[in-house]
Every structure is written in structure tokens, then in C-alpha cells.
Length: 462
Image (tube, rainbow, N blue to C red):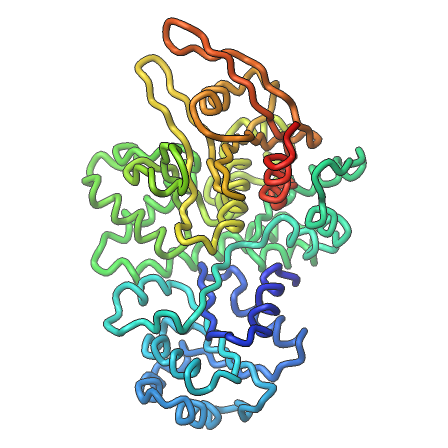
């Protein structure tokens, strides 16, 4: 099953200054499968070692001697000998934390041997374990669920997946292509991007079987809680987990989660789920300049769930409900489209220094203005609104563009791509001020091209 990260791994493998690579991400997003697929496509002899099965190997990694480590690994059942064509893969590396600092010695003493590692719940090991990290000697790759284009390729719609990946600004889209992509986008809203769910859907086209996969994955996440919550209340963590899924896109108020628990306790629960990468945060930024994270209010944020399919499963939304909504309902009612957009934006900016997404919120006495997302791309601040309807309904965008340094605004909806010159007036209290700006409308299925298309129009304005 194709993943775009294969291109990253190709560049990594060919890099003469290659460092050991640590693949980070939530459980079951396809980290191990990615490495296996990569080794197969490039004809590499994969030496895959699942450290969860061999916790006793902590002693050999403490030796700081890569030759000794390799020798001991070769003695394990079914393991090949290391050669010039080998690819060493240390899976579930969080199970043997001593293996993480040992990566530096492969970089220093065995630079010819490509070394990959992967693990879930890695953030807890990296933050809590008492060892010195091999700073500057390892590289990270962040992985999330499959994107919409990967989903299309995974279910046999390679042409449509390729169309999305190669879409260029100004390119026309025919009615048939547009209609098919919107229809398949609806399927993605339900199936989501968890690889097992996509694989089952590709094989069976059964939404009922997809639901079984969702429930199994969710149960796995719940079973993981004792691994990282310590003595915290398990039932409360479950409530918080489900609350997040049911309140994607809504500003967090701890009193809405529980009247019985203190806000500090609930905040810690949410932070733990975020570290486990099963949820994400969209943090308020005042958007006064770049970088956006220099001007954030960390106390004000909206949640995202890991995956839109899993979110709908927690919310009890079945395929019949999704299939009967029209496009405007899917975008304007509930959090489906906002979750879809959020997880794709997270994927696009996953390797940035600050991985949390940002949004804009202006709170006033009589009214508030809020934008779903604000992203930083090509040296520009770009506001992004997930919305259907006429431009006249975009009051928050008007307010933002009238007060911030942004060359372009983006609306994600179900319409064909277009650029409209907005000319309107906004209230400044007792007077009105004229606001003019270009509005780029993109169908949600093109969100993976947002950065490229937005950058083009920022640089090529009339």
C-alpha cells in the first residue's frame, strides 16, 4: 500500500550524511509496514527486530559497541547476517529505551549501515528516560494516518490519486472528476486513513467491516492507557478520550468535560493523550507576525482527533448518516470536514519545529471572530476557513484580512477551484473600513496541494 513517505525514505537512503532514522507516530498508522514496503521496493535485505519481544536485549545496547550489538542480533532466530545490502530495523524501540542512545554509535562507527527504528508512545520514553539523547546524530520522521490521495491509491483509484498530487494552480477540473472525488471523499470521511481500515475497505467495500476495524483500533488505544498514565484515573482518561472525539473544533473548556475534576487534572490528561499522538491541539495564535508560534496563547486551544474515521466511530456515526448528508451539511454541520482538514494540515507540517497547528480567535464584548486554521507557508501567513456558502458569509475572514498582514485567504469547500477578489467593508466600532483581498477557494479534496497553490497565488497576484 503506497505511502508518500517512501519518497522521504528514498532521499534519506541516498544521503551521504545519512543518520539513523526514528519514525514517530501513533500506534497502527503504518510505521512498520512503511519500512517493510521500502525494503521490498529497493531490494534491501531487511533485518527486522521487534524489541517488544526481546526486552532482555537492553544489556547489549548498553555496550555502546555496534559490532557487538550486530553480532548478538545475528544470533536471534531467523535473523540474517548483516551485509552491505542490509537495512537494520529496530521496531517498537520504546520497549528497550537503551537502544535509542545506542543509535549514535551506529552513526559514528557504522555509517554504511542504514538503521531505522520505529515506536509508539515514544514521546514518553524520550521525555522520561534517564539517558542522554544522541542530539545531532539521529533524524526523525513523523507519521500519521493515510492521506486522501494515499487512500485513493490504496483502493485502486491511482489515476485520481495522481491527479491530486500533480494538480497545478489554474488547472481546470472536469465535472466527472470533481463529482467522483467528492463521492470518494465522502467514503474517506467514514473509512478514514488508518491503514487496516483502508485495506479492509479496498478488499471488501464493506462499511460494516470497516466499523469493526475502527472499534478494534480504538480498543487498542484504550488498552494502551495503563502504559503511560501511571496512577491516574483510568475511567476519567476514557471519558476525556471520548470527549475529545466528540468535540473536535470546539474550544476546550474543562468544565464541559467534568465538573468534578480540577482543570489542572484534565489538562494533564489531555497532554498525555497528545503525547501519545492519539489527539492533537490547534492552539490560538494572535497572528501578529511570523513565526505564528511566537504569538500563541497555549491556554486556549481546540482539539483534533487522530483520524476522521475513528472520530466518527467514537461519535457513533454510521455510513448511512454520512451518505445521506449533502456536501454543505458535511462541511458546515459537525466536525467531519474540520477534522479531515486538520489531520491533513498536521501531516503537511508534521516535520516543522512546532507541530501544533494554530487558529485565530478574536473575542469581543458583543461578538467573536474565529478562523479554523492559520498556517505559515512560503514566508506568508495564510488564514484557512472550512466552509460552504457565499463569500458574504465569511465575516471572520473579512475581520482577519482587515487587521493582519496576509496576502491571501483560503476557503476549503465543495466547489471548483477559483480565485475571487473580495471587496467589502468591516465595522471598526463607529465607522466602517474597506477591506480588499484575494480569496482562494479550493475543494477539500485538494488540501494536500494547499501549500503549493497558495504560494503560487501569493507570488502571482495581479
